[in-house]
Length: 73
Image (cartoon, rainbow, N blue to C red):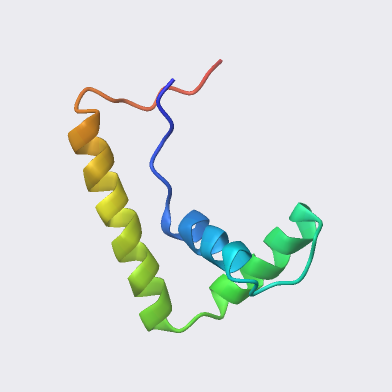
């Protein structure tokens, strides 16, 4: 199984949890708060994480050239 590359929000979520931007322990509540932060984030912040997601997608494509997302049925 090859995991999909992370998108900009998932990278932002990982950053937020790792850097203590939210002090909520329960993951569902933390995700809600991080989503609120993402929606209100400055365009520079969103652009930064979109760039990181693009780079990750490029690395993923280079490492797995025949990869095609196929969800389990």
